[in-house]
Length: 462
Image (cartoon, rainbow, N blue to C red; front, side, top):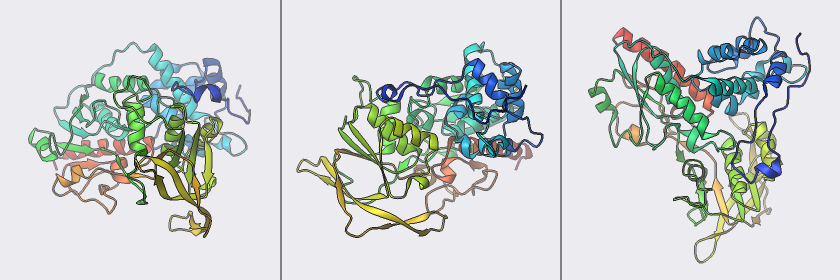
């Protein structure tokens, strides 16, 4: 019997006043009973509108139908045909604006909890997986992937399934990219990321860490070593700042540095080699998912007051609704329609406050968002001893500066066509290195598209 409830099943979670003091996963996942009930809400539409909203084109009705039949192994098989990182996507994808945003059940109620079901299936698989994977037959060709983040891992996984000898080169000491250094443990446990990467290695993917392309080895040298095509999935890890006075004071971080120390280097542990300041009052400047992550981490590190300072209104925030709601539940204070103009410090160069000005929304800008305008005479000082800047990132220039023939745009992003092909023969690119900071699933979609194009390129001999 179909479940015609207008409301999706709630996701169990830690209580806010408990979870904001630990780094354990907030969402606890569906039980088998709940997953079956949620799967029964799917109408199994013939035209599959939800699939058109998925950047990696998972056959969503088919996998949910398998769940409804209690065939969880079969459901995982359907998902894994399109996605290399299902346990990750089930946790961090913005389903509300993608697959679930296309779900017809969302017209007169809640859409089917597609992401929650994907997470359930992936977690069930990881719990019951025997660990045996059949390696594809080698096709005798080699390809290199730069960056072990979502785009690079997806590209590598798809190429490996086609029989390629694939080597991934990662600058950090751990593979995973933003999955390990950017997204906090309470949203994405690192054990899950490691499990997904081990699955790719079982397919034959080689991962070389501590390798900085442009320093350790160049793209030209990769071709000299026999790689027939190269994919650049190096992300956008170069932080931006506002250029206001005081950004060089002690206690000012980029969100990238702050989150990398917390997530990758475990700065929340007492014996961490790279601790971060345990501030009393923290301001996080920005309104995206990264800003929410930084604010929630600061709260877990013991800050009494954590402010989100954003120059537009809450309705204009690019962060997921779920992340905003979780932040509010955990005690994060939202100061929207405010913009920093100066960071204040003492004689020892430590942050003592942040001068802000109130804003109001004017006419829409070229992107369609209403432009913020300063209110004259509305300046005030926010009492903080730590400021985290989360206003965007761009690609590191190292690769483009050491590789001839690679065209980039004014933001430093690689220019690539719809298949990921760059201006350099045999070099493809995708994910944040092309688009600038975006979502995990969009990066995965770019990696998937590029893998197909690389296969066609190598086989054609061009």
